[in-house]
Length: 238
Image (cartoon, rainbow, N blue to C red; front, side, top):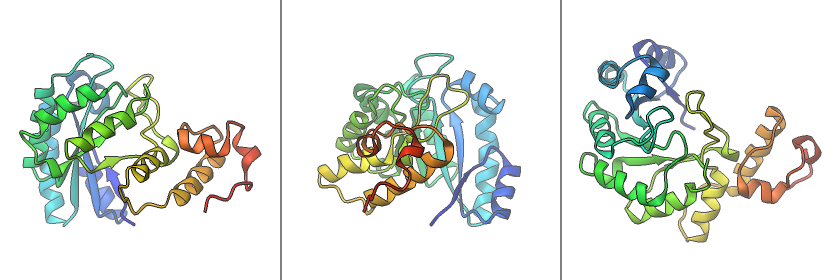
């Protein structure tokens, strides 16, 4: 098991280190407005902060993963120039990030846009060091993954049950559900090493504790749409 913590600055890195975290993530936006709303810094200011974080993390033997937020659209500015996305991604790579996750923070990405953005980013970041982070707000996350697979991307963020969201991205629903992704990849003959049954168990555990329905389509197909309490202890996902 590897635990990762998002850190906005050097103080966050030190707190993560004290908690025993061995990998951290820094998140720079491709939108000036979102950057100001999210971390109260401009893009350039955030990159300067993360450069210091990366230097310190290297001294501590802590790996750093970079994220480019609002890579496909911003809730405040609308469209985002793919060249700006590539510039931020390249900056994160050069300051020491082992991987850069290009993120659809508000769930607006579609396959054509994915191809365009990945093409731009791949000019600055090797394809095997690019990851993608999708939200399924508009039901396009799996289609986006298919497009990215054809482009050579093999790393995708996902969350059990589709849990997630962003307080500074109004209307954004949860992340791409791990169950949905695994089901599709299994059907394509792509081995992930992840147990679908174990993910379903994790989703059931979370749904029981958060008290509302999780959006994963695969999970909902298995357990139905009734309240979490009605299903407690009634399924066997093995």
